[in-house]
Image (cartoon, rainbow, N blue to C red; front, side, top):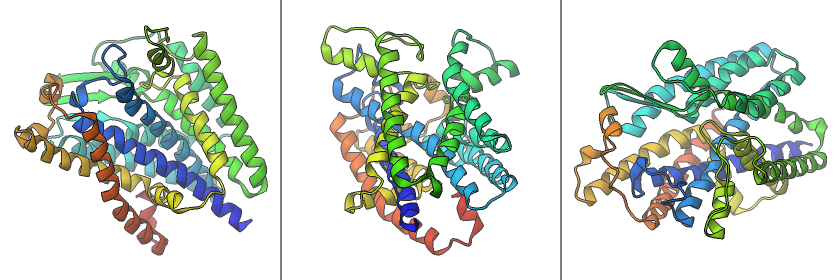
Length: 395
């Protein structure tokens, strides 16, 4: 049973590592792709199949990241921790993540020392979700599961509500369910990019998912559950999407070319994540966990290295990409100051006409992954040999 436990944890690390590496591709595209942050690679009227795929494959990252964070919280509590201890850890880690998002990560994105642009993304969503989960852990597990289901499946009942304004009520609504760029003035811009309701629900479901990784559940039984849960999620996505029944505010439609019809079909809404978006990404993730639980080779070890230190990878790789972007922008003949993204420059979209061909994006992605591997390997070894240091749990 000891080996089974090791395999379970490693399979989760493997999935987490894979999505972290894929995530770096999207961030490389943001800083090096043509149009910089301001182009939409999923716009069917302007995209190409390869550009669309480059963006679409990264859709798996945030849902897996948030879902598995909930699973990790359950496994933390399963190590004979009281619910009070679990709640306090989630509360303090959630508060820490909010600080990291607002200061450390925001500076990584912009290199603007005035922090005039606050972009609230996946770390914000995780931090707020952990704060909520710190209260939910005191409820019966069945109730936590039901809350997760309601938030993930039912938030579309709120899709018709759209607000404009900057009052406290408006800001709360934007944070909960409506993606919004808020321009207070040229020195203060807030982008609420990850509305919270479905992310909170997804983390709650990830928390309950941790029950499958208890020793008494059994490895073979777990793999069967993972397989059929994943297949069920994928089939649910196909059925709901095919008839545009429910689960996404944007319907798909046949296009002039068959390949673009496929792109339209899988182009689910991320902000906030629709039910179909979650089914489309979490379903294959569960299948992946089922198929890879006992696989061990050099390739899996490579990704597991990243998966064991996901927070470290996330923060550091943004700085690495942004520093490389400065080199790229100087190479292109522009001023390095153009890579300092202030609220004013972002609102003005001053880099709309800047960027490189897609092959450059992929080369930068490979370079960043190669640079991050020894750093992540070192930090993983440091964490392994210093398990007694409590603060490492927050990093």
